[in-house]
Length: 138
Length: 146
Image (cartoon, rainbow over all chains, first blue to last red; front, side, top):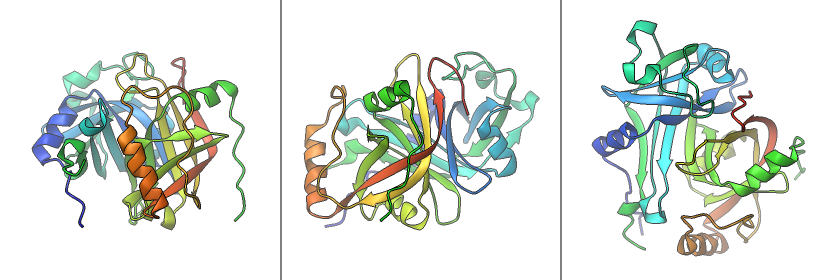
């Protein structure tokens, strides 16, 4: 029996990300292996913007290889689990073009605003999502 | 099969990993780009384990490239947020038992889901995957490592 689809619509996935203030960020190390971090984020005009310290390992990785993945999820109860994953190439955003809502958003792990941070954006195009409320066979 | 060595993990990090299960698991896709799998991880004895359908994207990815990374967080909507990043290699374990849970049951406990997962393991549809840490960064006490 084929498994039922629990994928969100793009609108639902976008709405989910609009309610988040950070994402898990995956980058590639020099040897092509993965690395992960938590970064403040903001969804605006079909692009996910995120910010990270310029001295961080993740920033060094992005400067070398723009391929990234961003994700967040929720788990109030099993059948309310939702998550969105975005793949893409991170584009550097000039200081003047950083969305206002992201400028002073604190690093969730540092709890300080990050004036020394670099900003990047990923288009919301290559999206994987799941919504366990769509599971029929319980 | 050789038993790969884990890096030493300090007691406070070991305790954090045993207590918390919210995990972002990162694998490498066929085209060499990274992808993230939000999931539940179970840590014990220096290894992080999870169960997953054998045909899942994450298992296909690690069969091709066993280099992975896991980001373990201290729950959902918890302040202050704390995290540990574990980098390492995976191996698929032979066995028919779910990894043993450590610490208190999570608030959003899912016994029916756990029973279904155990049944799928015994039926051979799910595999238990173990991550052996080779590198670590801690984001605890708001001290940013890595």
